[in-house]
Image (cartoon, rainbow, N blue to C red; front, top):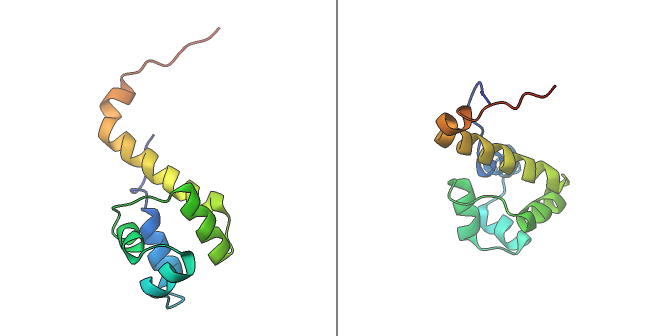
Length: 98
């Protein structure tokens, strides 16, 4: 698994591609989503990931799919895991089948 660039945290996507262009404050979005401002702040600052429940809420709110948000999180998690354990992953042999 090699990547040209690191995967972007979904909180950064939420902030830069959705909230900022729509001029949504954390307070407004938190109120609309029924979550605390701290939750959004932690997402924006890469201290929290997108949960299944948050993916459902964001999908409804922005007219996307929950899979969009979960895929962002999955890609980020996989990239981070690989970066931390690449030497272990690369030492696993490839199974050869006949």
